[in-house]
Image (cartoon, rainbow, N blue to C red; front, side, top):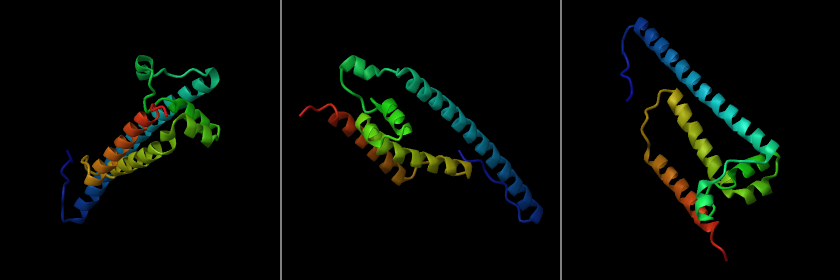
Amino acid sequence: MKKPRISSTSAGGVGILSAIDQQEKRKRIRKVLQGAVGLIVFGGSYLIFFLTFGVGIPCIFYKLTGLQCPGCGMTRAAAALWKGNIAEAMDDNALCLTVLPALCLYLIYRVVRYINGGDDGFSVWEYILLILLLAVTAGYGVIRNVTI
């Protein structure tokens, strides 16, 4: 829920409003940066571990069914991208070059919106985008397990 804003017609009131908004914005930026640093440290550590030892997190879905889930091979694909091998990354998991970049751009949009004090609601186009990305991901999960 969005906090109500204090409004004032005097010049002093506008200055106070601006200072409050800037302070809130700084808090939000700090919060986002803390999350981003945590994600980079965790992801980077995992990637270094994978590149060093060649061991990743096993897929429970694959262990139980013998079928590849849409995320299977994403660690190998990220490692291939890190090495600059786009073709290998595409072979390991095509979603790393299709759905993942679109999802990252959308998350950047949401972060910018959050920092600037936007509401927490979703627009119709956001629902459509997320449903489309989910459908592509599910379709990829089916197609990669079909033997011809």
